[in-house]
Length: 229
Image (cartoon, rainbow, N blue to C red):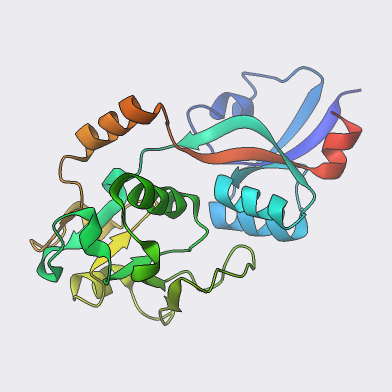
């Protein structure tokens, strides 16, 4: 009898053969659930609703720090370079990364993997002091409760406000996004990427570091891992 596993994960080109059955894992019957990422993260990190799931890398690392019963395997459904996901309002006087200090920057969640990578790159590659930025979060409820270090200046925007319009209107000086708002495909003239030649910058980052940033891994409930290693 095969092991029956329920997994919640996105439908990507690299996972679809498992979903449509053209690739069958030996000895495992998969019940594949395609769900929105935030739902997967929230249910797995707080309620352990699945035998296995795609998981935000930064949230997984945090969950391990908090002692949650999850074990990840070295499988990465999503990777992405992130220099191209920082947008600035040119009216805010931002010309280079260090100009973000003292400014208002909007992002979805502080623990979101994409923004963790972006902040890390800004800090370690460009000398940006993250404590000198005012952070504004727009996700109404976090995927997992955690206490942020007091050194960060973090506020939440009202749930009825649209973050892209706040940015365009000058209420934010910059934003960091995991994926583009539709409005960013054709933004106002005063909005641009922080790194205007981002493909070149990302290629240079990879050449220097050898890092292709991991966004998501796959985690199993600890009891499933221990019973069926």
